[in-house]
Amino acid sequence: MKEDEGERWTPPPAPRAYRVVWTGDPDTPEILKETDDLLEALRWMQARDRHEFELRDGHGALLATG
Image (cartoon, rainbow, N blue to C red; front, top):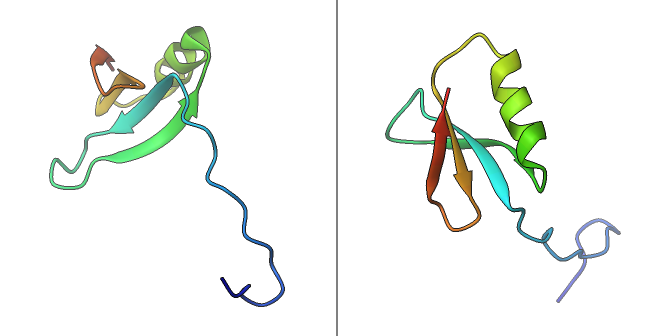
């Protein structure tokens, strides 16, 4: 495969155990943060003054809402 503008291809990052998803637009949910640390994800959600967040595990199961 040809390199674009001198940048080498790098594999995608390994999937993380937890992801914080913004659900403000139900048609296009957006992953805002991925981490392997559950407490870090919960603290990140708590620090935001919004309620359109979901915490999901690596398989997509809902763990918490914010």
